[in-house]
Amino acid sequence: MTRPPVRTAPTGAVYFSLLGPLTARLDGHELPLGPRKQRLVLATLLSRPNTPVPVEVLTDAVWPDDPPRTARKNLQVYVSAARTLLGPAGHEGRDRVVHGCGGYLLRIAEGELDTLRFGSLARAGRAAAGRGDLAGAARLLREALDLWEGPPLNDLRDSAGVAEEAGRLEARCLTVYEDWAETEIELGRPAVAVDGLRDLVERHPLRERLRAAWMNSLHQSGRQAEALAVYDDYRQLMARELGLEPSPAMAALYRSMLGRGREARRPGPAREAVGPAAPPACTAAFTGRPGELRELLEVLGCGEERVVVVSGPAGAGKSALALRAAHLLADRFPDGRVRVRVRREDGTARSRAEILAELGRLCGVAGSAAPPGNTASPEGGAGGDRAATAALADAWQEWQARHRALVVLDDVPDEASVRGLLSRSGKCSVLITARGQLAGLAPVHRIALPALADAEALELLGKLIGAGRLRADPGAALRIVRACGGLPLAVEVSGMRLAVLRHLPLAEYADRLDDPSAALDELVAGDVSVRHRIASGWQDLADGDRWVLGRLAGLAEAGGFTLDRATEALGCGERAAIRAVESLIDAGAVTSPAGEVTAHAALYEVPRLLGLYAHEREGV
Image (cartoon, rainbow, N blue to C red; front, side):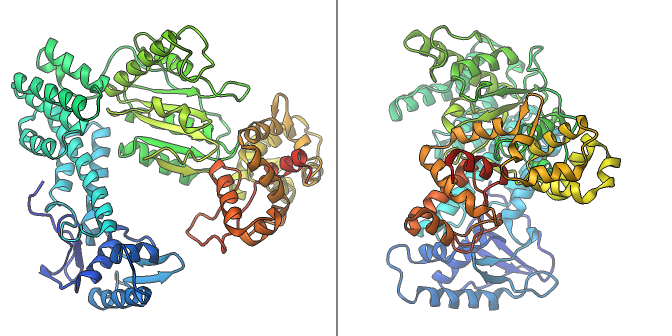
């Protein structure tokens, strides 16, 4: 991990390095970066490339304890010196460092910063592994690792802010090293990874994936006794330091080394005859969401992120998007894709025992029968039932550790419902759909679903009522989808209703939806009711949040509300209003701007149909 780095900057371009001491080179010559405080500012900006860094973050990095009164002015001086030193960005002569409402932003291209190049190579390597090109994956991952010159930002780690960023970089390096080592072992070249894994385990003794790779590399190299000793050392360390046993996956690896031949223990995705079934078929009317679908496929397809949360209000199309992605990712998950609903039909949360039992049945996990007793209990009941649930959880974790599968946990009510289901090791990925954002889960990749754009909503409506009918009165069709608030479920229900009521002019139906007192009554098609789905989301809210939403729904009728208007409507102080609004954002009941903006400048919105329902319930 300390080979000479590969430089990628073209002639005349500055090349920055964080993977070691902070450096900047121009045509092979190192540039002077100024005094220490100026270098701290530059290191903090480079740690968040092409992203606004708040002034407060820069201040804490330079003066963690007691910033002077002139801190902002001093920062301006340091940034000005950096501009002079670094010159313009790109070929358009733009400023390298710019200042906006979100803070200072440093413009930088992938070929100018080693961390960006590192991330690009790592993603490419994981994508190659997903395609089955293990040799290409090993080469790309090794190229990424060769960019490292030592502990990142090792000359500035006495600053707490910089040390935190350096720790994140080092964690990324360890993950890529693990990926590379496992790939080399699967290629039958374990000897190339042994020494490096030993050194890293000595520095990170509790990192289980590193230790498992070291065990495998030793065992595949014919050094079985040493491999077993690695496990024994780990077991004793866990007991001594944490009072815990190794994970079921680690224990299973140890048992396999005791009882099988060398080739049977080569790591890699299992190819057992019993595997999870494919998820349900996608809806034929799935439309739109090209950006979100592309992001989902890229994130899950490259294998860098193992947990993705897709959030949005009831009826936003989260399940449809998840199922669409699951079908398109079939070749990335050779051990299958499985989908389990985390709620019952009445909207209440299922117990962990029920979910584990269903996952076990679908995936062929041994001992997957539902435990007896009170399955409504989150832990599966008392006494023996808790033990049975714990056994199911261990079996599920062991299955995930040995397979490369995609698990879709659909309609998750809260973080507690899924914490015990997420993989602790192995190559399984989990796609979660939820109304709230599940802020307590980390680290995860988040995708929030906004309302459909007009063009997407019209396309969906046209699929259901026919393109000819849509073209006959495009103005009325646009009124319909806007009255639905761009909510996919509402547009779909409108389409299903109009497909049956062929005599009903679009303009007349648009008039009905424009009437706030009648809109929800019109959004019913057979047994599909928008009001019923929104009511389920309403029940998820705490009593205080419901009251707040009722007060804010009236403000949203004019197209949104500001923090000042929310403060006035709620009759509270500014801080209390901010907390109340942000609680609803977290619950998925209020939307906020996609980009960074101050709380006072933001324009918040309540989805139209949710606002109408809030009026009904709260009598606002």
